[in-house]
Image 1 (cartoon, helix red, strand yellow):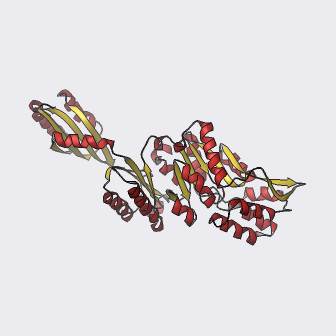
Image 2 (cartoon, rainbow, N blue to C red):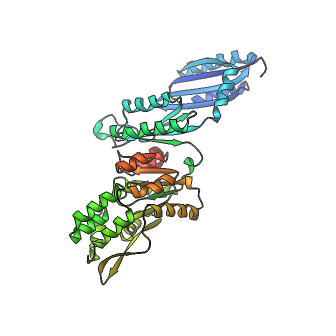
Image 3 (spheres, rainbow, N blue to C red):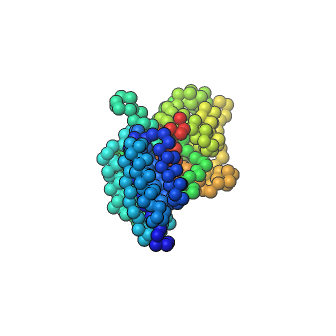
Length: 406
């Protein structure tokens, strides 16, 4: 840079008014000032605008004088800060640093929650570049508030693998205090998710269908005990599945329709599916449950794919056997890979959501794996989790904002 070049940062704050940015940048344009950076934020009716520009010493005085008059005319405060060339070059050099998105999600996000997360950010040497609210504007009265709140932080800096793991663990532990925190690298794949694969039982629906079938067959306690042990990862899923299905022998198939009509649907499913379809996501059910119920959800909510287990039926009754390959944890991960190939996307563009130990393989290979109201072992292993609100919380982990999707 030549010696007569100056770099100046201006910060404007005050009541937001139409045409403010236009009138200020017109002054810069008149003097051929070069804008190096610009950013604006609005809270309620207040505006904060920052502009970093380059000019020459013979023009800077007139520029600042005109900007000062214009700010007075508009009724806003303006502050001028000279920036040294070395300081600017250092700032430019930081643009290669990794960027991360931290999403705070819960029934409410308190000042304490924000303090806890931002303290961790500072302790790990990260800078916060931006903060935005993803959920709708908060009503003043508690009774009018929606039962969810979400704030997204964009942060920048370098982290070792050990630091990432430490932050992840700190954030996951906050779910014990009513807050879910997602920590994702802000790269091209995060911005271009295309496929979401869901477990069904205890994820899309608030029950294990095999337990419902077992109740009708009079073997509820036996099957529930095996189910719980399998979901905790204590016994192999294939073994547990065969043992549970065998106990259903003789059950009339009409019971399946009765159960399907009264399935307890998980909070937020309908809203989530409506929006995911609207913005072009492909959705799949990859379930260790049964195709009959997966197809029921597919017809009702519009899932694109269903892969689950097929119960064998003879003369209108279950035989206690199943046909085809068991959809266990290994098979779920395999199906996720195959769906990515079929859709022509990178595995990093896929999202997987589940609650049980048999979901861990697909959660671990997906670009975004979410443990949803999960068993302790699953939550301890997963990188992201949602434990405070319903399925539509996934929309915020994808970066979708209420004001843009409703």
